[in-house]
Image 1 (spheres, rainbow, N blue to C red):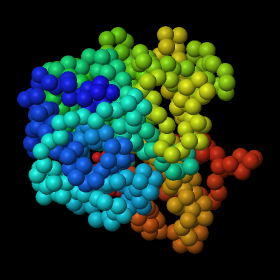
Image 2 (image 1 turned 30 degrees about the vertical axis):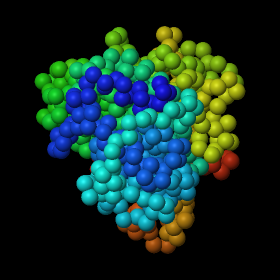
Image 3 (image 1 turned 90 degrees about the horizontal axis):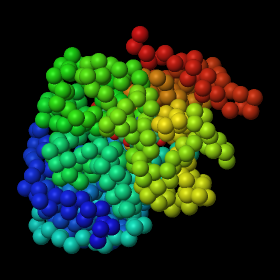
Length: 494
Ligand code: MLC
Ligand code: AMP
């Protein structure tokens, strides 16, 4: 039974069931016992809907306490939780449905998309799954899971532009949660300020599991806004964010030292944080952000220390349970040398859903996973990241793959050719930029409209730059690095 993540999370709150788990500043507060009752009822409801152990349940809903309870219900009942960005377009959603073959899709009542398989809604008392669940007794038993059983599947894009489902096991999630809980010193009187989306590993696993392992309170914000974070900070002790959150906070005149002096920890990750932002945050608050590095396939991989020196520009040491090495081809790099980051450990995913070839390609024979990140280790074992092998863009902590957008643009009559590049952006870290060669009459508004039907809004190019030709090397390959260099100040505020 120890092998079901739900069991591990529930056990930790045995003595604290009447304590607040999720408190929404504008809404209700749920205690641990209320949340587990809700998840037990959702687990019964899943059963009523014909969902069976090992099935996939695809969940495309805005952030809510219901969504958290549904996640826990899926764990408890032994079905695979597949969260989607609620901004996903019908095109994107249909791809995920075809690929994951869920036996149930859960969306919000506002979602007008026609779902080709059984679907239910949550989020309101009148939503179909809420109504069904509230009419049922809570399931108490927890489905036994084996080490390799998959708890959740999160889609992560690929260089081909087709997202792949990373299968995360109960065991892997338990190990990562325990390791983080330990190294970040979580305790029951912590109050976690939760302003992240809950369809990524960061907001769903890293943040929630750390708090749940101490049965601590979570201030559950619907989304990140500077004002809601400033309002909630006085009650919090820990905040987890992406660099864009800290950039925006630091720039606000109401954000100051007094607001943060009681905080014991600010963590950042999911995207690189510049030394400038580290320093600006430190100047305003007197606090040193703890930067850590993770990815969907592995959870958190490295972290700066809680006690001990946190160095801006490095992502710290490998977690105790993680082996990490830097390689160039088949050679191990010496300290200081730059190469590909490879990792091995119990936290790792068990493969890409129905993609045996892609899974095999991402692992070495000795079990190391090739992350696609480039970095170097110093003599003490601190990792510094220096880029990525593939031309993935990270905008505000969201990953965007150029290929997916280029294929859409190239299919339009007014665009002969395109190259999508991430350019430095003071707020988002990188901003999606389209370099295009136009044909006939080009209208940016029309192109945006056409893309809207296919790709989620956060992936839309922030700027279109019309060029006569795209720079190419002697093999004919577009030299995106030249575009990145030449246009590096396109978004700079100065
Ligand atoms: C929203 N928009 C974005 C965007 N987020 N555009 C570019 N990049 C983004 N990240 C667009 C919307 O599509 C919308 O477009 C407009 O901005 C306003 O939407 P919004 O929801 O009001 O945006 P905002 O609140 O400003 O969101 C920005 C943000 C958010 C940074 C607060 O994106 C965020 O919380 N990001 C966190 C992502 C995260 O948790 N990543 C973890 C990945 S896990 P329009 O056209 O409709 O106006 C991982 C592993 C690890 O990487 O290590 O953790
Ligand atoms: P995802 O596929 O959404 O899980 O994103 C994982 C990627 O985010 C990693 O492979 C890194 O490229 C990047 N990432 C995560 N944390 C950091 C960090 N602290 N600094 C730089 N890049 C990071």
